[in-house]
Structure formats: C-alpha cells, structure tokens
Image 1 (cartoon, one colour):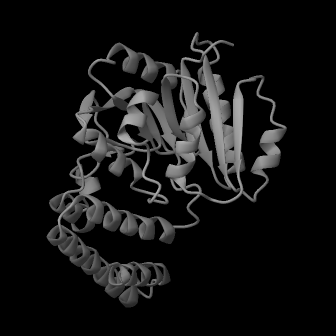
Image 2 (image 1 turned 90 degrees about the horizontal axis):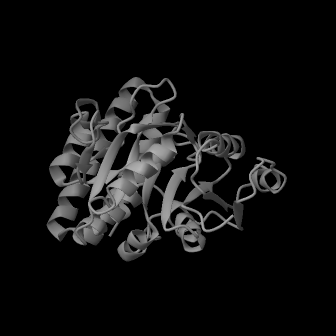
Length: 299
C-alpha cells in the first residue's frame, strides 16, 4: 500500500472487547471504500489482555500499528504518540468506545476534504447506545456557560452542549471523533499532556481558535459513542472534569475568573453533598466530598 489518505488513531485502556469492536466497525465501514487508510492503536498499559489480543488479531487488514505503553500516559499524550507516527496528511482521532455506522468515516473525510480551505477540524454526529443524539459540541466554557452546566441543566436545554441537525461552526467538538490535517494538529501544538483525561479537546480548540482555525460539526456522519468506557465508574469522570476546569482556567483566564470558577465548583459540590446526605446516597457523598477537597487543595 502507498501513502494512506487517512490515519485513524485509537487509544485503548482496559477496553479489549470494546476496542476490538471499534476497529472491526472501522474496517467494515471502509470495506467498499477507495480510501487508503491505516489504524494506529495506542495502548496505555492495559492489564485486561488487550496487548495479547491485538498481537494475534486477524482483521484481514494488514495496515494496523500497535503501540504498547508500559503505563497509562493519559488520553492526550497517547493520541500525540499516534499522531507522530501517522503517515497520512489527514488524521482521525477516534475513541475506542465508538462504533462506526454505515460509511460514516468516508462521509466525514469527503466533507473535510471538500471544504479544506475553510474547515480545519471537524467531527461527526454522535449517538448514545439507544440511538438518541449525544450532545457533542458547544461553546467554550466561559463563566456563564459553566454556571449553566453546573446549575441549570445546560446540556438538557442545549445551552452548554448540543447535537445540531445541520452543519454548524462551533467552538469545540467531542474528542471522541476529531478529524483534521496532521499539519493543523502540529501547528496547534497537539493535546496538552498536562491534562490526563477530559477537557483535552476544549484546550486544543481554544488554542486552535487563537490561530484562526475553524471547527465544524458535521451531522451526516453517524457514530455511536458508548461513553466513559475506561473511566472506572461515575466518580472518576466528575473528578477529572473538576480538574479539567481548574487547569483550563488557570492556563487561559484571569485570577478573578479562576476565583469565581472555584466558588461555583464548591457551591455545586456543597449542594450535591447536602442532597447526598439527605437521601443517604453514597455515590453523591463520596464523589462531591472528593470534588470539594480538590477545589480547596488546588492553588
């Protein structure tokens, strides 16, 4: 095979079966396509047999590369590893907990290539397992947007995240599916490796915006995103989101904005703790005690 048209990068961490299903759906989606592509799997030190499985995996597809990390380096750093060895000019970052529907990848690729002069990053329309639309793009997390997300069910009302029916320019798209040129990704500086998991894409697109790059949501490419497959429960994602907000604000915003963000995060934790104690909900108590302490320890 000559130089591929597309490099597909998938990070795995203790998601052996889910990752295998993802790759099989990619291969099936592109079976009748003329696209030349490679798949790069970066494993973050899985202990569930992922490495052994992929050493012996026969997909009838030879252009599969497998990077074995000895430890969990985080989502951003692992994706950066994959991007460095990608041979194609165009790359697709794809979560391991996704399932490609029909010819979604080729549709996204064609849309991106046809609009290459005006679009620098694009992402597909994501769906939950039950095929309901999954909010997967939105505005940057300014203080009003964070307030809406924490206290006004902003996702439900489409204030903080949404899933448009039409092609739409947005501030950010979900890290579960990002297509771009390798050159664009390198110019932005790749994913910030200081963010272990969650909010990497928000930071990436914040830097992209500063360079004048444009981000578009493309609704005619459909992908199922199972969500939080390697997070290990509900508490971990919330703690990482808290960490992500704090990191982003300290990096990109004023000291006053950081102060106000912390107060909002603390208020959210206090309210959730009160509800948890009133209803004897161990999950709420444990999660938001950790979240509150995180805001107190953060300097």
